[in-house]
Image (tube, rainbow, N blue to C red; front, side, top):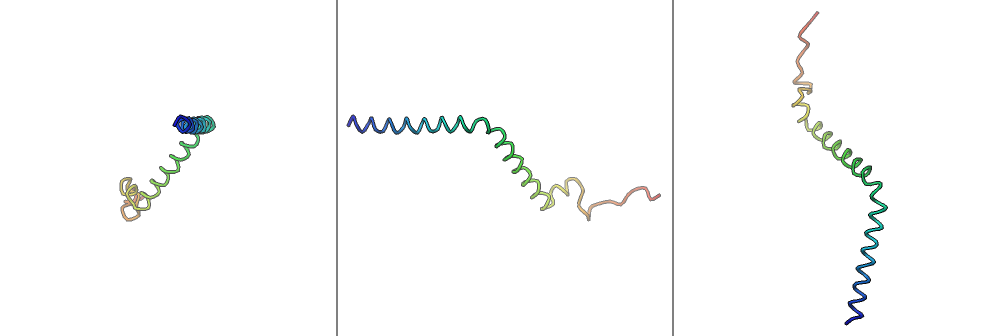
Length: 73
């Protein structure tokens, strides 16, 4: 029984070490990774809303809603 408990604890310790080493390698690059990911995601969302037309309607940018110029001369 003691051997089994010892084996499980050593396995847990190895996993903990792997997590710590992985985190140390990942932490310096984390801000770049997350900022790129969120810029990509927000760009996809804005592109989708433009394709659907919601942003165009809100900004009055769609071709059928554009008003002609007020001054004609």
